[in-house]
Length: 418
Image (cartoon, rainbow, N blue to C red; front, side, top):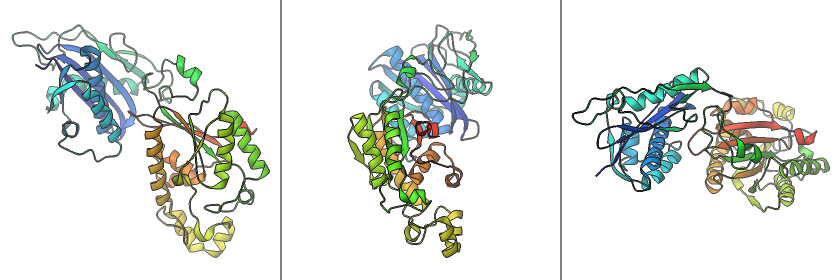
């Protein structure tokens, strides 16, 4: 016999836009609401918010009912219900990590049904999602019954308006109005990271829209040090110059910084090109780590433009240069387009996040791959590549969350070089 009912919902005001989710756990015998959860999750799509609501609902079931509890799941999202029931494939890359997480939680329970219900029958979860989004729009956090921001609340009231009462009973109106508290920083949407700023994170209570319990996979991005071609501001792609004496000093300065608090690297991964490998090896030796090479982190192949300055290219290939600057699908003569670079960098990112989930990884690479990782994290268009500047041996940081959007925490940081 089913013991609990999970009702979950999520929404986005813009799709993508400001988004939030709500979830309620009911007693299957009498329809009473036992626990609820809601959270604003920043900018996301409807489907992401709906999956986040499902995950929150399944966690409520585990918290209240424990491992192996018999649960019926009901949502007004046809997509999520059909995908979780295994009748539809999860085709969207952005939903796969969420579907996997929901599946892991579901396997810890005994889910007796995945059922689509009309929105009118999902009013409680829908209301919670909207309350969370309304609170975030005011710079506030949703709270229920004194529960920490973004957490779950165990209730002692009957089903709220729109809930399903037990036969022969009268539903009691909920006496728990959502309580709003001040946000400390609406621009900080992240929870604590895996290893970066470890001391601070161990005592963090969480800020912004994210709960303090999520662990990030931290990608620390380091551009290689100076080479003879960078001194002369020449296009340097698959050509393989070594670091200058100044470049080696820059690498040593980065190593000194990355092996002190608040950093704690778990892995070092580099482009195969010499300038990046030399930089990575300097850091890895200081950190006591091995160096892993990933071919997809190499710089763009600039083809015929390799070793030339921008002015030289403008004079010899004016039409080709104009086309390249206007369209990321266009490659230099005999070279590689930014679109092709983005494809392989995306592959590398997925591999590394899967392999090092919850840990801190140093990626040593080049201008285009690093800009691409930053652009993807910001969900920015390809043209954003032309609006970023990266200094030699600079550091940037992206935190990736399994159940939310990536967050760029720092960009073009050169404090260690001063």
